[in-house]
Length: 503
Image (cartoon, rainbow, N blue to C red; front, side, top):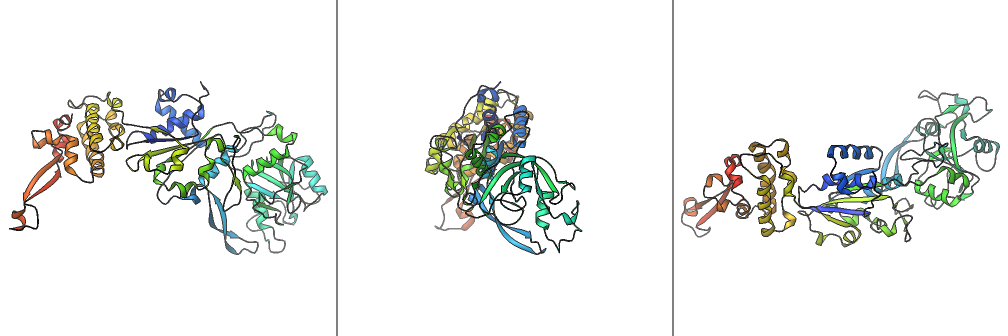
């Protein structure tokens, strides 16, 4: 049962490697969307929680991305992308379009009205609606425009090609190939249409509700699609939200106007019809950023670093919308969007993170929890929980707690509690991790494993041996008299007393 629990809008789960940060993003995301206490969701079977998480991903309520060193503003917010396009004369040209980034798309989806207020009106936007410009027999008042607005549809011509337009249709004489392809094949139910009244004004906004139809009963303009009009009798100038450009003569084409812009027009229009059909989206949306500290925050977020503040969200008292640099569109972050980041403190300390990021996020520390290993079946007398706890105590003193070892490295032992699996974990994960932590200072790695306290060298994980310099180089002062060498003792990895000796 939902308890209507609220969460901070921006969260970062931080801690050493292997503490379950990415694992917990699933739990936090489901808890946020379902408005439930995190403790209640943690108590559930994880596979059930993950199944619901996957369903929310499918419905676009959850999105996931990973930051890296080359991740930039263009991928996150918007950028310019070259595309190949075909002209009316069948020539292939290179054009440049403004591509929305993953976070901008996600925010626009979060603003999409979820459902109709009136159950009799089942019209819904699709999850990523395209906004189309449509000319209804040119501009200004005319009989076709009146028919379309009164009877809930849009109509276009090129009747001379007949009902069916195929790849074999010859467009050489009358043209219209691009427009017809858009109207017949590319428009989808749930897309939005803006009726062009003049080069700078629209007079109606609607949602497409049907597939392409051919209506021979009309004397002309026989191609039709049904539309549910959300607002009519407008005279709204869209030049500013269209990037400063007027609409072109083409009968049908995709506009660069965003869904947020359209919703803003509908709100401004304040029509009774619009109020009946559109219900603001009250669902919660969660955007997950794994390894958030690996990206250049100033480069990736840009001006959005201000917009993600809870008080600056859309609908809040200090609401802020900014002009995006490429599209020249106004953009704000909806109040129903939550951001969850993960941060590996072994890569970077919070203290040296971008100040703007630290100020805008709530930080939740994820530390190793050795108690989660208590129920591992006995492995030749080895207490895995006690072993990990002792290693982490030593690492905390030699380095700091941000470089401890997470419990999740040992979770495979729950399904396969064997000395062979423990060997695999140490060989492939624990030893390489400590080599990275201590920059191959094997003397300190020996201290972590308590190899210096073991009486039998055969159970030492890191074997220490000395070489007399003169035996290698003869009499020389160029090197130390004794050379200390280290090697990994693979045979110790299969001896229970090697692990028991750690604690």
